[in-house]
Image (cartoon, rainbow, N blue to C red; front, side, top):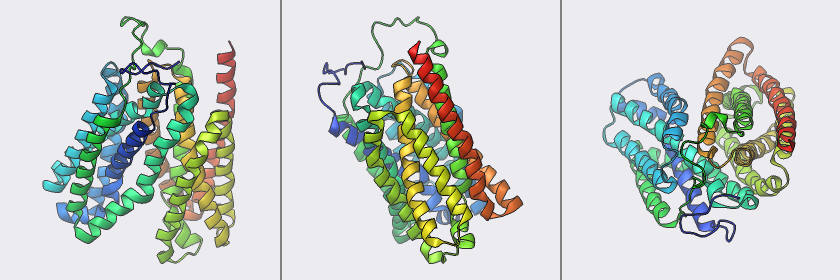
Length: 402
């Protein structure tokens, strides 16, 4: 059973729908903040008076801050109230956006992005584990699917809307608008998100260190699976635009529509998370990774059949929205209450490492063999991911049986 909330209401008595929707909205705003500089990169570079290449390094700086600080900060703040920590992190996100908008010099923007990366890692460590503390185990699939809607809509609607606002009214106003939105959502979190008691009062403070927790091997395995999945995905996804234009033969005017198709399919795919998760998340992950494998192979082998490419983008988008949500659910079911927050910090770190490595591998493949070879590199890595899921799920099943 998960811990009871600080208000004394047992989490299995009622599902905190409003609270979970508020948390999903906070995720939406934070991810919009994360990716907004990418959508406004030329305008941001001009405003700072630096090259686009230098501005692109802000992505690396951000990811580096996430990787370096997520797990240590999660461990250091493990005993702090979860709700209060989310409020502090959201305020930090808002402050970083105001820094970029009001003091658009390169050193200040770098500092803001470092702070944003630190906030990002801690936010996901706390927010990702929150449903495990707030709802009963049987309600976890529903809670995870609601949270995943926030991240999916950020990519489908939030970033494009912020980019459009920046193009129409100026990039600085776009960052101010995101900051104001986060402040409003911080107030909503303070009022609507249920508090949770994430530390079991029956477990003494001097108990065994986290590294000896019995859930650690399973958590590490899931993090490795997540990292490998992201390596494969971003090997291809990073170079999706040149693939659809140079290999599949789509006109450049179709690019935004194809990306929208991918994003909408991802949002629609999240509707399946609850149904799949209620049965067996590991089994659902196996089949969904297999769908990803088949999809990228078909797009790589038949790029000249544009209808297959469009269909592939639909399946790919749906599958790649389902998989992170199922992995989060599997992680919550594997990690004990005292391990959950740190486990999600490791999970966030593994995803960021996978994203960075995938983009680098894709660039190497493109340089050596051309963009037409990138889907096959993705497929090879996805085969490894599939093998890890199959063998890993069997291993964890045997461990739980003992």
